[in-house]
Image (cartoon, rainbow, N blue to C red; front, side, top):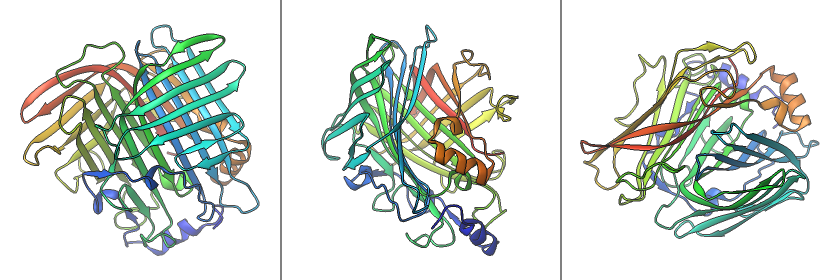
Length: 427
């Protein structure tokens, strides 16, 4: 299917009043163990528009941020080959040093859970049941070289929401079967990783020892038809902060909000927010202590989650940004709540709120306002801009933060760093 076609819009119109979006939370919940296939490159070029990514985030010893991402994209047009790129970001919140690179990769070849191109190589070792490691080496240009390993201990297995082949997957269209649906989106997580090695920027070597997380994701449809908004949060207790009694702690959350074309009662029935998140802690058993998901429709004040679990990202305030055209938040609050994996009767919750956000880079923790179209390969940029008219922007922030964790009524404040993204695809 060509992504230039109007299949999704046609199906949405025909299904008015009939459910044409099925959030992962409708059929799955809780911790789902990952299989080797879950994080193996798919690179499907027979299902229309596809974007597949592997991304690593790490908070280094001084609180600096390291981000490395590989993106594979297929337009769904037979005569247009798939493209691959690597993006890299290093940001020091103390000096405000920011380095951002995005390069188009030539000769890209996936190899299981690793991949190789003329500019970089990623070697994977290990199994989902034991330890796993990703060794990333890259020479992005004469100014940036990467030699970093991201390692997941056997005691902290990765997860998806729900078990089985369809775990983690939200589907679009009146049919949920592969081959009949309009599209899908899925995320698989390794929240508890460590990074080691070094990066070289302008001849200066930087130690990359830090607390990391890894995400493998696929967006199986055109991005402007999939979501209007995204929110992402990665909290780490590393970065030089004093360790709490919970040990090394991670909190992750991914949220997307559907377009008006898809809803629980068909097109124009209300956008749906889907959140998936987890809390990991090295001093708890199991370390993957809480995995939750939530889908809600309508204003935050009126929406009702379909289960007792809470997983949410709420924006506060609103600063009109003339540069992007969007209204950016002045604060964001993230929440996780549900039954722990240790005991179903043990209620566990976590909350953090980041405030004083701004639209000025270098202030309020704002690293950068990423103009997505300016960073993707030319052929995709021109096609998206011409066909959709969208102007997606990602607001990236890094701030010291406190995660408040409550386990069976006992509260613990965990000091750390929060890297978060507020993404706007369309109004």
